[in-house]
Image 1 (tube, rainbow, N blue to C red):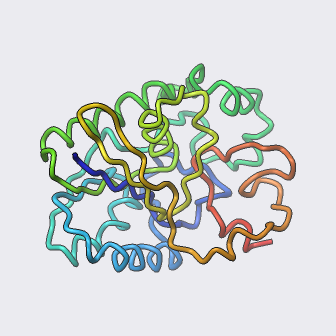
Image 2: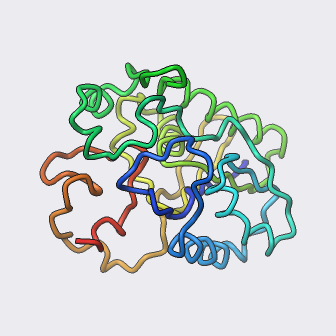
Length: 238
């Protein structure tokens, strides 16, 4: 049984209001660095066989404290990079929510290819991400526990695959910044052990205030934020 610990990157100044996508030079902010230090402490008792991360700076910086603590080198894995959002990259989510494509992303993501030369389909993003996990599982062997740091929509798509869900259901999954998701892969099937574990107090489950427009979720809309949003920090800002 190979175990993968999927870690979403920590917060940046753009996380939540803006769809960062593959924008270069997006670094963790003070909150994100604190999250990275905290998750490294949480993982201190786990013997990891490898550290793998999306090549984008925010993922590399999130795993840096774990690398420092374990002495492991970080392998950059292009197949775990953020989805190619094409012309949506760098735009505010509240503006994108008015685009007709937004409704398709919410209800029929398997049919979405983002606009522009660098636009990628969500199907292709899922396929490469799952392929990355499976190939690292094979490389590291059945007894390995390894960590992969990536992005919300990428992790959601991996979880959907592990659960046997159609990609059109992946918006039902939530993956907050610096949360941990664990999947055990066996010869017969994957087992999803935990999802979106941020180690927060259960008080965070209280009924949240109405989010601001463009925040984690528009009030009453049931929409999932493209790119994953900023998690509970969106609600704290209200």
